[in-house]
Image (tube, rainbow over all chains, first blue to last red; front, side):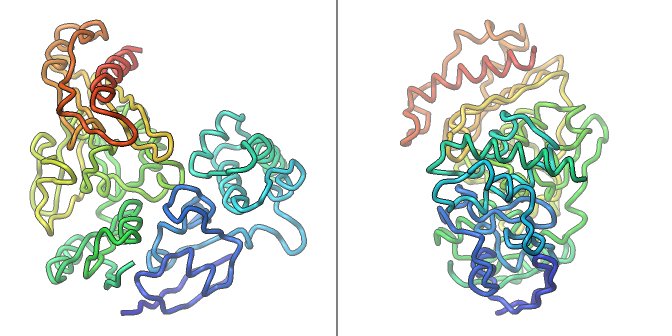
Amino acid sequence: MAVQISLQINGRTVEAEVQPNLLLVDFLRQEQRLTGTHVGCDTAQCGACTIHLDGRAVKSCAILTVQADGARITTIEGLASGAELHPMQRAFHRHHGLQCGFCTPGMVMAGVSIAENHGTPDPAVIRAELEGNLCRCTGYHNIVKAIAAGAREMAGRS
Amino acid sequence: MYRFEYHRAKDIGDAVARRQAAEDGLYLAGGMTMVPTLRQRLASPSDLIDLAGIAALKGLEEADGSLRIGAMETHADVAASALVRDRIPALSGLAGGIGDPQVRNRGTLGGSVANADPAADYPAAVLGLGATIHTDRRTIAADDFFCGLFETALEDDELITAISFPVPKRAAYRKFKNPVSRYAIVGVFVADFGDYVRLAVTGAAASIFRLPEMEAALAGEFTAAAIKQITVEAAEMNRDLHAGTGYRAHLVGVMARRAVEAANG
């Protein structure tokens, strides 16, 4: 039986009727057309589907949409303010923290969460905190540089 | 994923009543094992009863020399708790090493222990510290709780509400982890309570187990050297693509000695 839910997505209130077996990532991509959140491995290991749920980084491919009833969600689309990129997005651009770009939305969302939890962490902390995000192109060097730079910029702003 | 009905339980009584009313229901905690299991069609419950809204399953407090942690506390919250870090740093470190940050933000103590995965981390702390499992109807000692591969003493509709971990003099957990899943290929939790020592091994066999021979040796002398000669039977170990039986048996000794050294550190 479909379940009525109400949640905040990128600052917007969304009311919907969903089946209990609908994954949150499918709800975001297919029903909300927020296709920035990617599905990489489909087994909750790669982190390409990372979003923020009530301020915490989570894997939206391992969460049922009904579990997000009442939650506040931020996806990659919710980071920028209009045409102005979020500092973490800008840092990924500047430091070229990507090659093919498929893992990038999850990396950026994880990076924002790392900065929120650790301030301006050193590379070892960043690497440990990226355990849930896989990139198969870059070797991570520029991703780690980008997150360090983005975290510094976020700290300078607040 | 097969279809199922979804219920958000209001309180413990409501959860158990809905579970009993369901034809083939399951409780849903953080879902970090449940949702991937459903996706792979390894389970087909008629109903899922979500425990996320039950305030009584949260909380973290010290009472009578134990830390009582609510079943729905996430790994991230247990790892971040100043109280846990102060009283049982080994438990704090274990919680902070489960899976990855995203998993720790959702996964729960109760979910992990009820699932009783043979390679999970939390069962090592439950058995290694001799914890008490509180349910909606009784308390169960850790020694009576884990019964085999994904098997526990819980009745079908029984719900873990909290777990009490006795505070040891010193303790440590060391695991040799699978680099992809971060599950323990072998993990050892050792706890020294002064007049006795407990040591639990996860990941190595079909279910978590204690090593009484090592416990007795460590009660005499709490050093890595005291257990250097003690080995486990390779024939009783798990074998999979990550590690064979002989390698796992060897790792039990290595991880046990590292855990003792860390507890002494």
